[in-house]
Image 1 (tube, rainbow, N blue to C red):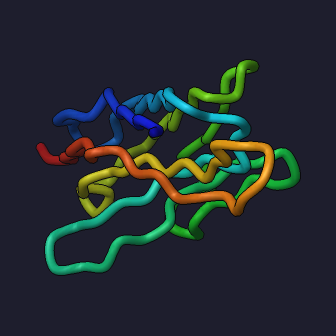
Image 2 (spheres, helix red, strand yellow):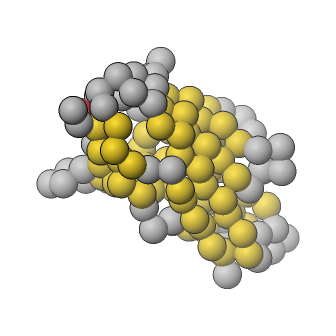
Length: 120
């Protein structure tokens, strides 16, 4: 079993910064990729950023403002969010793609979500 826990959300004024953290633990054999998604009321969940050993990708809407990173151990990730805008308001979810054994396909694991509100 894999547990995914986010932290770091909150209320911030436009132009401000927040840093989200996510830690994956449990029966992890290897982490393939880690990422952040967000979902605003009435909208579908969308990819914000994802990082793996081969690539780092960002949604166009956050390029130049958000930075995703992983710890050296590989099971913790961060999302540094700068120059926040009201349209960044959403519940942010941590996603981990991981294997729990030497064989078998990687599976998706999700955190419970953390609210980010950008408002004056």
